[in-house]
Image (tube, rainbow over all chains, first blue to last red; front, side, top):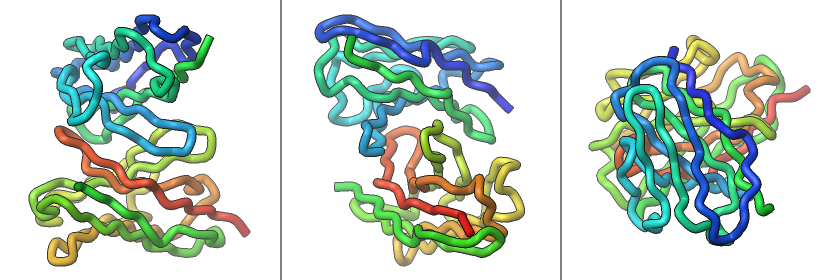
Length: 107
Length: 115
């Protein structure tokens, strides 16, 4: 199974700040890496697929990058609605696996 | 507009069964693999099952293999999850999802396994 190690688990940040969340796979996943945002009410919003492709309607301040085993999600300038949980997920092979999540909090 | 609406959650005793449903709309359901993902209270996301477009191929993690069965009815644009021999650790919100590429998730349905 491919393990996904996500960091940090908690990220205090301020409005307007640039932040980066990292995700490391236990083996190469050939860019098959997706990112999701979860709000406190449980709503899950897909953000990015295949490392760097924005889902429809996702603001351009979100971006993704990476290759091999190391991937990242960057938010260029934090807006109030960005404070939420973020998860990475690999779909290179079954079983599909998620990172443990990053809680983006207001500093 | 794509919509995925789960139903069938509730309180169930350990060892019993429950079947979840997901009604899909706004896209050609039969063209997409579909999945179930769950989230235990205060925990992260866990993939539960995936089914191919025709339903001929299914995939499960070891944690549910042999107990859960994913199925679909393309004529009804519906996805199902039959859960047998339920355990307390199956307590979670279960999400129906179209994963990969242009992804969509439902709002989830809560399953509580308790005596």
